[in-house]
Length: 233
Ligand code: ADP
Image (tube, rainbow, N blue to C red):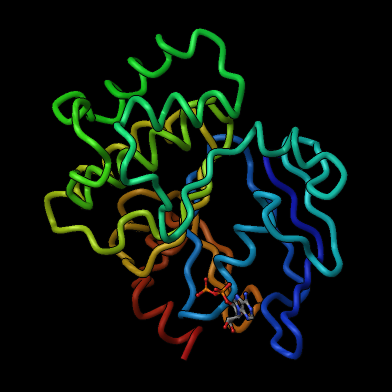
């Protein structure tokens, strides 16, 4: 398994964020993680990426424990947080060089060229990040998440706020890079899950309420949007 989550719970003071969450992701799966605002998606993603710690339960990423082997776990994961924090005053290559340095990427100069090409940043590469459109900023965030060639991608609402053309571009890019990685992505757009994912996991108030193959829903003529509404209202 790429990721195994067992009985994970997390509270912020009195606020329950996750309650006994369990699921596993197999290598090569692209999984849509759906839930209303405040359902616990970002919290779980941060815990998988070792930026937060669970109160109880266990998570393994590529057979490594997130609590005791966090540095190794981080080397296996590319994480694009919801707010895509970037250094706006840095040039694209400068930023990728900084992030690649943190991961001790070998042949970093060559890797930066590859990743700029793969993420479609060629035409913008002379610019500072602050000068880029939202769509290109997302590409920089993805490039940074991919720089160390991780086996797993965790993408927290990667398409929020993009215009329709940018949306198509980023979706295609995720589909392309997802061919050889395990991807967990959160989104509010059902079409996106339909188009990009082979599986959907739905969370409500910190609890998993559905875990289904997209093909399974389609075979049973279940409309994902309606299914989601029924389960989360
Ligand atoms: P989602 O990503 O699905 O919108 P979150 O994981 O951000 O959900 O939030 C889950 C719950 O935890 C919400 O009730 C939210 O208000 C709460 N929460 C998230 N982060 C914090 C925090 N740093 N401090 C206190 N409560 C938080």
